[in-house]
Amino acid sequence: MLTIYSSDHRLHHGVELKDGAVSESFEKPARAETVLARVKAAGLGGIIGPQSYDRSSYVGAHSERYIEFLAGAWSEWIATGRTCQALPLVWPVRGLPSIEVPQFIDGKLGFFSMDAGSPINAGTWDAVSASANLALTGIDRLSDGTRSAFALCRPPGHHAGREYMGGYCYLNNAAIAAQHCIARGAERVAILDIDFHHGNGTQEIFYDRSDVLFISIHGDPAVSFPYFSGHANERGAGPGEGFNLNMPLPKGTALDQFATALHHAGAAIARHAPDALIVSLGVDTFEDDPISHFRLRTPDYLRIGEVIGRFGAPTLFVMEGGYMVDEIGVNAVNVLLGFEGRA
Image 1 (spheres, helix red, strand yellow):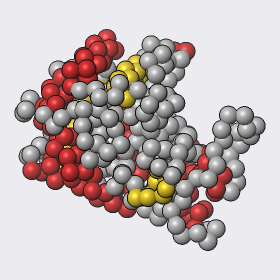
Image 2 (cartoon, helix red, strand yellow):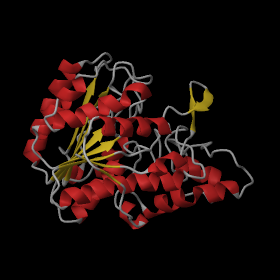
Image 3 (cartoon, rainbow, N blue to C red):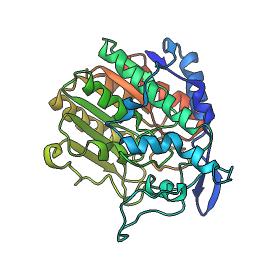
Image 4 (cartoon, helix red, strand yellow):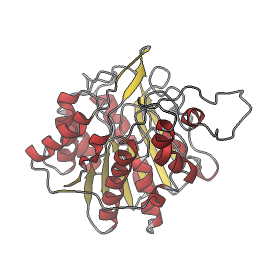
């Protein structure tokens, strides 16, 4: 399997507000480096860099004004005399009357974010645009006839919505790839999100569309981040009704329950008959992940890959979460090896 990777991810390493304190983010460069090392050790296949894409390639999944904000936020921040990482201060919560984009950067940070876990620093834009370009390169390879590819994206993307960042995510790599695939002539795309956390951003972007089926298997939002999306009754809206499938699972979920949900996902994907399948590959479902509470074990990821391989669609894997750094490489690559029948 071809892997697409860029060292530009190292340009972004942030902090987050968690447990009442600002501390180093769980989303760190070592995550991607560990996965890359395992890709090489396992002999997964060739490794290439991303193609170049104009920022207009991100529009469709995101709005133009959001892309403009992300690209210019650091310059606006340091123009105020501050050199620390930029985090939002206030959010436009329910009941506030204004829906206008503020002129000052502090207001913009809140307007275009969902939490205080996605800081912006000097290298953020270069890192997140490179990450999106990995997914775009991968989907272009599928469109040109490749059966499968792995976009080793960092930062991840599935929490980023049309006009907001959050959950360590800035550009929604999977959504950008899906939109690009449709723009290239595909009639139908499916996105399967197997990260522990619900892909709220991907859901929001495609919620009223029937050409992109979104399926997410994740921790119950009643007790798990992002809390405010991912319930089973969220089925899509308008033309998209029935094309959004959420399967929230309880604390302590192990392989048997996860596999049952995965088989239901496979049936839905078969009905959709996509020209391409994009898998948002998170391995924070691992039993020792520090910010999640499923109980999957390292061999289980081989089985998950085998099941996805039987779906039969050209498949792009896009790296999302997984925060037990010592194990993220073997777990992520096990999915890919299982997919290829190399378990």
